[in-house]
Image 1 (spheres, rainbow over the protein chains, first blue to last red):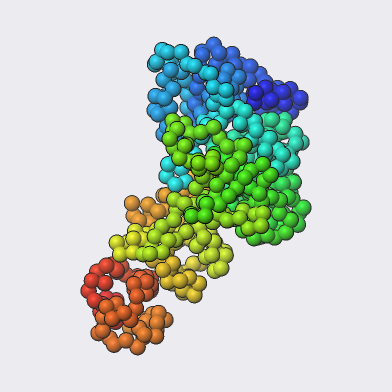
Image 2 (cartoon, rainbow over the protein chains, first blue to last red):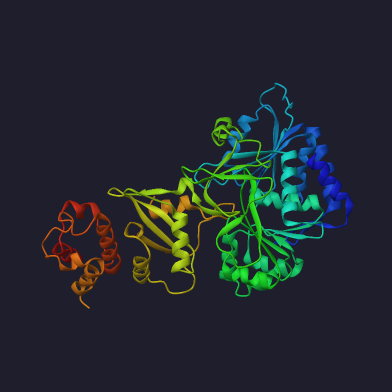
Length: 456
Length: 73
């Protein structure tokens, strides 16, 4: 289904560049993609491969080869590293497995169980993507080809994408955003420029050379770009639309883009449910993460303010985790996102994550909300709040600040905070760091910051 | 500015009651300051004087303004 759609698009303009690796400048055309699809099908059928696992970032020639396993109803599992390999090999012991290692080496594992695999599901899995485990537990998110195709259509329809677009992607292929941009671009017959791993220098060069018209940058990448490239705003000259995912853009960034008549979309979503809110902003609006979408139903749990969503784009479950998946749904089949939010008017506001809250004495603290207040009131710098274990109060506040070139004095900062925050929210530890530890999806690795603050 | 003068600023900044309190009266036990004031006091002293203070020890030892002065010396 998905593979047929991709092949159909590829045949429309076979000489067109399909994917460019902005680091190596290597390109692959749609014609080559069709050839690789055909070779892939031959290989997978010949070797009876049911599962293909890629570790790390595959080459742009390996990408269509990996996707082509869908032609024989096989499953592609893109992994960041070999963390989940043993679990996957054990689970799929009745399938032949091909592993493409980080260095490109191929390892073929013959099935260890002999019984024949029964592929009788209506929507067999096509893609299993492990989440980065923002709150500590990585989940294998299952998507069938039909679901993947629906999700591609959602992106195309939301942002008015066409085959004329040049899309830039900074997200690794083992993350859902990297896959979203790859599949959407191939379905459209557009050109995809991959800047993976994200490099500000490569971004500046790629924007100049390939003139992308669309991208979904992560806020930490944009912050790094701003810090390292003085003229970073100039790199957006060719864009017609920018999508901010799960974070509202800075006012300075919005002002510049709107002045250049570039559309800015603010969106919110997760790997399990795709986009759950999106809207194009036309003025300098505040901190919402997009408006409600027609075919996606959102409600807020009145007890814990969790965002609940019922959507046709919901994934097909968790790999090896039927019970975890069942517990991720409410009795009326809304998916529990684990994110805290509120709806005002027709806009969604992101207010934090459930697993991140902590207690200080009798007070429950939402670090995301506190970060928002601090960042927007006294600092124009990135702030992360973490719990510091304390035997008397359970926890106290630890505050990380990212060095932004200006001199930062902890005593002066504390003086400012005293005038801003109630006493239980004042930090007991302040640390200034050079750069954030990041997860593969580009988000800040909070677990690592918590461990570091607590000297673990 | 001497260390004691710096500490006086922290006291007066935190609360009028603390500023006016006797030097040897236990501050927490007499409810002149609450536990979150203690937290703030400890953090400010740590930041300004670059020392480490164990808040639990402090609370156990019925600390006064005088004992805090001794701590920073």
